[in-house]
Image 1: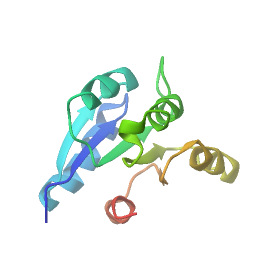
Image 2: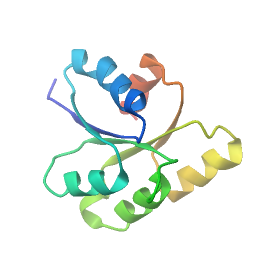
Image 3: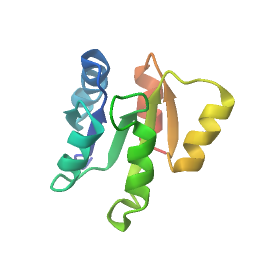
Length: 119
């Protein structure tokens, strides 16, 4: 398996740490960012196959970052997965309409995360 690069973006330390604990033993390279601004800076020079993106963050939300990335042709093929506690069906539909490939609900489960990466 080729190394796949995942960037986890969440303002909560534990929510950034957990996906890496699940994915690193499977051979994934996992980068962590605590804000959308930091993630955008990292994406300028870091290869990313999957962006695991929290929705509710201060300053710039995950939804805003997703919309910004989808408007940029460089990120058209990148998988963006919402990582959120927002579980209402209309919220999930809004996220998918904004360009998220998948929605993962917190608390995250290892098998659901692994399944989501193979969209």
